[in-house]
Image (cartoon, rainbow, N blue to C red; front, side, top):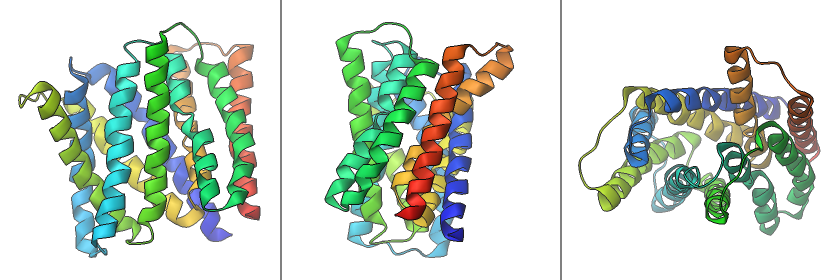
Length: 277
């Protein structure tokens, strides 16, 4: 029970770290999304290197699933999401990109049928996100890219689940950092060439989000399993929205209040289900 609670706390802490980053992305972004991806990944790489000193198991399967976790979500999933923002409203695209909270429990059915019980609180969380951020218009292509991002992230979390069979959380964090920077650089070189412009603010966002938030999430999964911590990550855009409201001194409307209530309720219900399972 105590271990599970620690996992929940770690997942919430990860969401807090991820929530701060969008502000830094917004004020520090360069003209190239791939340059920002490299700056972001560099932050994760820098903070991942010290974990090699803990001498984690690093066999072939650990590298395979750890690298898949890093490449499918943080590299390709993030890049596809950045593309979606060019063709769809940020609010709607962000909501669709978090559809992994519904997709992942369905995928986990191949491991354990009881994971299906997480689907309905996940749907409640999605409804809350829509009420908070859902607005504006976009194209089918934009929405498709946002959904593809969600699918890629869901598969990345499934790869993470397998990685624990072959290494420790410290090994996953190290492999993730190495795979992120290599993947981001290869993608940048393949699509735009070797000239890279780093952003100090986006690098700082990478330190906070990928370098601190990522390891906290990896540890939370080790303590509380894959399902509940992943659902809790949906708190991240909610916290970002709260920070924006506080900063801009805006008043909450009824729709936003209902959205916040739905997300929090969904997270609480999922956490209670996790105790029973």
